[in-house]
Length: 441
Image 1 (cartoon, rainbow, N blue to C red):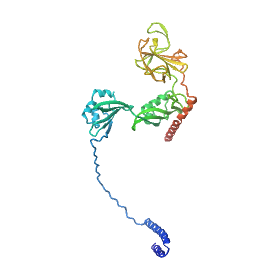
Image 2: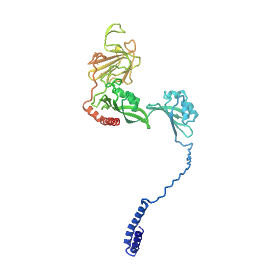
Image 3: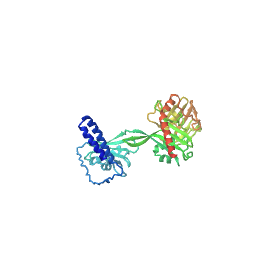
Image 4: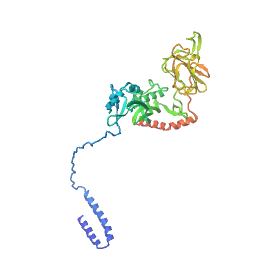
């Protein structure tokens, strides 16, 4: 190696006495060769290398001084939950308020009344205070509520204003496998309670969740969660769901038609709900059936062309099917009476109501299950109950025995629009099922 280096240097000396350009070209090549040799020498196997040395240095870092002016207009934000037994004034002080006058106002009956029961343990309270401990603003929000109550000072007086939260919707997906019960599987999958209940309601007509479930049944669901400033507030609608019960596939997709009406349909466009509810009341008992009876007011035998449901005064009365209001008002012995038209053939009547739902008028559209009025005893009635009628081509039928029509399936342009809307949701449900199957396998 040393002899080769000597020969190169001797050749360079000879070139210095000749062409300078050729000298520089050769010098650059030579220099590269020397660097290569140096590198080769440095990594030659077996060469002795000194072990690296390490040294531990410990240095105390001081806290940087922070200086905030009392005139700084930016608020301090503190957030927590109302504690059990805590007063509003105490919560405000705990979160930065030192203004005794505002704290005293927060305990006044006026403020407590304005908060309308929002102030309770677990309510989220956010306080924005000034550098001196004055109140910039405070807000109280119940878990799951779309509204918040804002406390602010105006001319030194504390005021409460109710405001709607600005929510943004995000789509969530979950799937699960039945091991013991439906709600155990849904809880294990992390579904919110409201979504689990709605899922059971959607598929309740096809599956008896008390007797039909088998271990290994599967479900997938796509649903909304509403957020405010990054915090989940509440669950929204189910957008799509699939349930595999004993090998049979059941599907449900939320479809919005051109009029903005929403409903659930299976993947073939068939409505998931019945055409008519059998009863317009959730909890009641039949006090008088469809038959000849002794009239309770007049004491004579008369034909009773409907069914009477005994229920407490003020019980909500629901429309038994989608339809339009044909009549709303007072009508002879019916008292406060509503007639709904459902297509060309069917009408339903609701009598003896104490009052009507707000805004109900002839021509109003109603949906199945929507509250249209409240149980009362107006007209020829001896006590609070609902008189319900079901008519086909204006001929009274027994609501408890008549064969109720199915809901109309989608067709034509509506069916085409439906398939377009559900295509991405269907693909995601398939992906959920396949990924769950792969995990199980």
